[in-house]
Length: 142
Image (cartoon, rainbow, N blue to C red; front, side, top):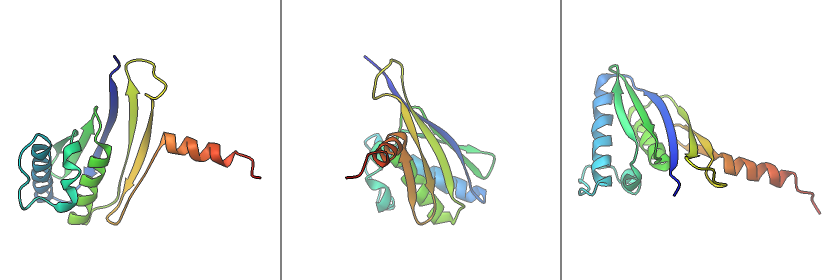
């Protein structure tokens, strides 16, 4: 049996310690929901559907940064979490990359992607999508 991994690690720059505390509390709520706890009434509706995939970690760094990382995925969930805190705190855009990996050679096991997140949108692409776009552009037109 093969073990699959999705790795990412990046920093989100906040503007103060209060934002850090609030973002960590939000992450703790999201993580608790992923582990089967009830959704509290104050939990943001825009994050509810993504809480089940909250398999990443968030740690405080200094007094105004979040270190977000994972080896098991949650790319859509982390994008939505970061998007929410960027909007809530009016932060600068955040960009990060991830890798897909496997402990055995499998044809579907390797790749990755990247995301750029702003207050208004999440743009992302996987290497699979990029390859598909590139190979389609090479097809002869009839």
